[in-house]
Amino acid sequence: MKKIVLLMMLIGLFTLGLVACGTTDNDVTEPSDENTEVNNENTQADNDASNDDGEPEERDTLIMATSADYPPFEFRDTSGEIVGFDIALAYYIAGELGYELEIRDMDFNGLIGALQNNRVDMVISGMSATESRRENVDFSTEYHHSAEMFITQQGSDITSIEDFNGKRIGVQLGSIQEEGAEALKEQYDIEIHAVDQATTLIQELNTNRIDIAYMDKSAALGFIESQNLAGFDDPTSNSPGMAVAFPKGSDLVERVNAAIASAEESGYLQELRDEWLSEED
Image (cartoon, rainbow, N blue to C red):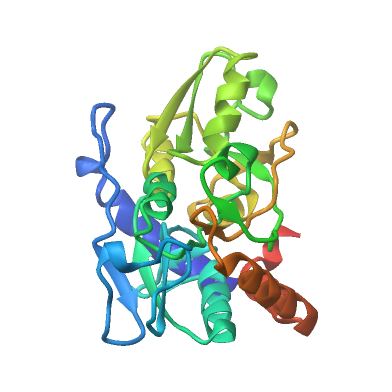
């Protein structure tokens, strides 16, 4: 976990250096998949990711989308390589299915659309398998269950949700926390500020543009330690676990489920939890 904290501190310093050009209330970032990592030299066009049955066409590469701004699940290390719990699991799954893996980095808010348009074969990006998402995509069995957490600055007078009235809460666009914040807004006088990337939330918190950042507990704990922040658990949280997402009707679902089961039975999933998520327990 120490290596994760060091990486996140470096990432934090970089993002804080961008305050002058940070996201404003009127900024709109279109989903992008221009950043791509491949472990071979052959890439496919966006519309060639899957055939009509949701199965990768005759090629040796599995195309996966992620939003690499969410440590410890997926993020770029100091060399620019995409790493994390989800990324290690993705390489394992691809290997079990007999594919090379191509990773496409895009905004979280664009991941479901990429699946619906068959631009990618699957998404692994700390995505919770909610009922609303199931209307648009298929999911694997859950591979990790976490909780939600609120992050504040050290010394903040916000120590529980009862202190939320009149506060501004930041969430990532398209995330389960955005849905949770909307539910909280029915009970508390809060303003919701949605941004494209989780790292931007921390930047916004450190520059007093929001009062609270709301995110998955595993990610929150890393930011709290690396940025010297404070936080507390969401007592209202009862979210579903994280799962791999696919285009509707994909033939990959059962094969990926078998790979996840194999990873659990062999102890590999526990090894990943120990390596990347050990501070959550």
